[in-house]
Length: 494
Length: 143
Image: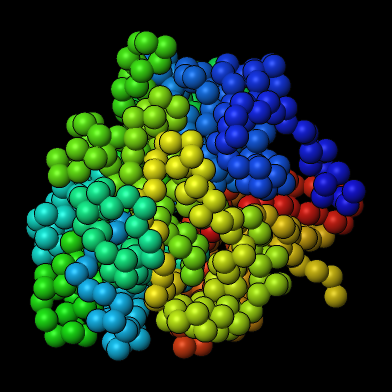
């Protein structure tokens, strides 16, 4: 063992019981403090990958949280995170349980939205390079990206954080119909900018309308295959070869700082309220405490910041189409299918052992997946269920699925969020050259504009688990079922 | 020449080990490593000088606060920093106080390589290992 491994201790083998083809259980007897079992939804291959880092141990640790119901859930894209694995769900009692910023993640409301068009590949191919360049110029991405054309005052930033997408649309950066096609209608009402630190606001002030870097991206895609034509049609996906656009990013420095600030506050709360935890990174506070209330209100601001950011970016994507094709954006459709969060905490009602309970649902690298008839699903989708959007890694497929009643039974109305990494950034950098990654994508006919060659290498497709497998497991378990598979034809990366 | 820092294996983020003969030196190299994640620090010129002062209750939270302050400075001013000199880490009634001078210049993508932004400093796998004249600090930056 090298010095580093010796210092961290031996890797414990987590006890696992197989329940069925795609479900494993971590029994409570594995660790004495587990209040509920852990459950892992995966196929054998994805499970083996989870055993190479601390994913499963973290799943077992989350099961220690006061007030946790049913089971600590790890989804097929699960990998090691801060305290909680990324790709997981934990629901705790609203009053007797705790809320934890680690169960949401640093990038609060990292999420994704999908736009459809009435264009086909043949329509767009002649202008694709120009369109991609125009989007790359209109949507700043990469390190230190800022906009010159949108400068908010601190007061405007507070309004954006309090009102979300509605405020952004009122500024002329969107269409009124965008609002209803956003989770939470683009605004969590609990938002209170007074609970957000000056540091967070300073970080976020200049970053509105920017993509960020790392695994965030903007893609022009085409529909590769439709699996459920009836639901696809309701979502606005009408034919294979149809052009779509996908925007994947989060709350930028605003949200990252909110998480950092409140992790510090929660660390003190753990001592104040005498909460025993197997890992200090599960820092939390009782749901009825001031610390919990403050965090939730600040988190809601960051949630609204991210929804607003994706809305603003949508506006510039539509503008880019207008600039290139010299027609109004509406003529191409470019309507919003849906915008989902995949790092968020919600107050929801769920059935636990025949009783309806009010719970904090932590979704960290997990997407809400409500089925038909649920009132939070937009009226135009309510007959079929909520659109679920799972972005792949750069250059691979992305998926549209639909929420199900089964999700409410087994995963607190949730499913996976993406592919999940399996190769470290340093290993990916050693293995792949950014220029080669770009060339390989271009040889497949994908136009690439990236702000960073280094990130291109780090984000190379083999560094990720297969999103197709993740979508397959979600479908087979029944927590969100396949509607359509999308593939990129151009990629803009920070 | 002794290694100032290196990047360790981690699936999603930047896992850094920084070295020094003193705690101050290890902290300086931790800062250097942090900016190396974002850019090619070699290409950054130490033109403007800034002062940093942070306080915390122990060495772990001091490391955290030091790096977080640098991250916030970058995001709010768009200045990249390439040189760090910690003049002192002193005991105070409530813990520790760090004073430093830092040098850098504004981000200019025509000269500077943009790699990846850092979302946050974390306590994940944070360690401070002290051996005679060989301090190692390890920490993870969320990318």
